Image 1: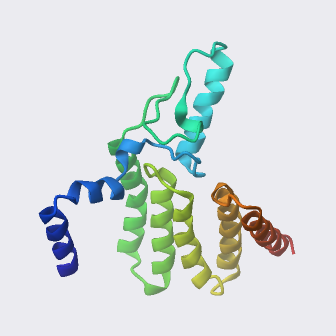
Image 2: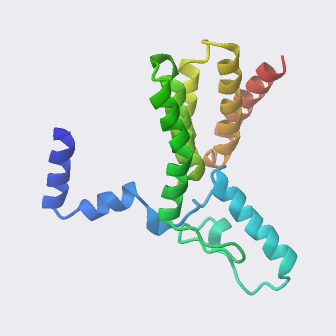
Length: 191
């Protein structure tokens, strides 16, 4: 806590605290990142795009949520989502987790609780990146040998995360490594 207090004081003293807060909480960038992370809001935006195509055949509005531009996202048919609403949804879905921890506070379950909390923040968070899933993978990888179910979940998470970070690999070598990794994980799932 002392370190955090010193850092806040230093950034306030040089007049850069707003810059730090803007990078930690990028609300001005909009709900979606230029590459949609595979979370709930990507599904929400996809439904809005399907409704746009199905109900409105004119090309009058150009929604920037899929153009690779990072700015405030506005939806054509579904309600726009505010940062406070995403915080509410995250809290709503973490309450059952807190209740589970309160009723059964065992150290054995702590990695699973932590992974669920991180995944909830990824799934309903505002302006999340695909890389956020790497934290969940690391936790499940650490406990994957505890049970066959943990190993299976860990493998499924590795595959889904590998697919979701494909847009981050812009070179052929990166994609090749990713394809080999995904192929190996799919082999593990099937056999």
